[in-house]
Amino acid sequence: MTSLQNTECIIVINCGSSSLKFAVFSLEGETVLVKGLAERLGGPDAILKIERDGETTCVAIPEASHHDALQQVTARLTGLNPRGIGHRIVHGGEKFTGSVVINAAVMTAVESCGSLAPLHNPANLIGVRTAQELFPQLPQIAVFDTAFHQSLPPRAYLYAIPLSYYEEMKIRRYGFHGTSHHYILLETARLIGKKPEETSLITMHLGNGCSACAIQNGRSVDSTMGLTPSEGLVMGTRSGDVDPALHQFLQDKTGMRLSEITTMLNSQSGLLGLSGLSNDMRTLADAAANGHQRAQLAIEVFCYRLAKSVCGLIASLDILDALVFTGGIGENSADTRSRVAAHFKILGVRINETNNANHGRQSGRCISANDSRIPCLVVPTNEELMIARETRRLIS
Ligand code: ADP
Image (cartoon, rainbow, N blue to C red; front, side):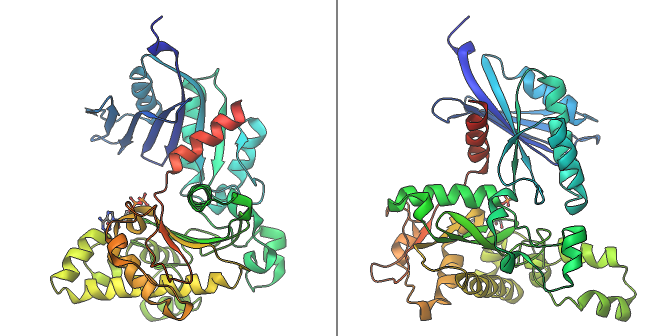
């Protein structure tokens, strides 16, 4: 047996209804050994992309199922010795306050949370079942997007609707992106030299989905996302908060069905709906720079609504160590950060534009000016690594 064959690793799986994203981390050193994505599964143009040793391979896998795709991935893990598999599970309801080793009871509980996340949980479970079939000997770990937010107090998680809806149907605010917000807490605490349990932050995860989180002494105390990931901030294609009377109004005016309104709010709104151009911030930034007025408007609304929500979240904190930007937009768009921070002038936030333009890479991740009353940081997120760490913790 060569030394490579002894490379112990953790497989991380993020399974969607027609996709399977994966990453393989070395158990020691947290290096990414292999990563990739299978897309359009079940269709004629299903494809698998794998990166290993600096080389990217694309394989057509027409009509491949999740099982077929994972089998193809497994065949490319030669020389590696998987020790456990971590799965991203979107909704853990109130049942899961942390990551768990998956057993039959956990599967049943995740299934029962399915009605809260019908687009996500069933797909996540396909990933678990497929991995169980292919790696029956390995422990499987569930890492929930909601778990980090289970520390929200009732004042933050209750909707002001009759309490019976919460008591009987668990209708409440859950919050998502918890794996990312938790990772950012740990990274930021390390960067500012504090213990995570003594660190209080506002973290802003700005990707295609966007959410902000208030963290008081290492615990999530509020999130902009709610019962589903639709609540809160303006996102790539999601509207975020709208008036609860909107559905009725639109139905009366246009005859749209509820499901059509939901699709419009989830898939045709946000940056895409406002700009009429794209859900992608890069495209909008380029268009805005070239005078595209609706792109400019979309960016303005996105930044203002984010700033307004952050100010709301501050109400939940006694102390604030830093405002932290992450996600594709948060990590890469200096313009977005600058615009958001401009709304915090009254809080004494000031940005160092040179460090901001460098995304804080030459300034210990800090992008605020020395005299800013609240430090601002850019901290890249790594949800896969967080899942790998959780998996390693639970199998050891
Ligand atoms: P996901 O939520 O799917 O993981 P990401 O975190 O990768 O998405 O974020 C995607 C968003 O990040 C897109 O809106 C994209 O345009 C934006 N983005 C990535 N790089 C840049 C950049 N250099 N400038 C502005 N926006 C960027």
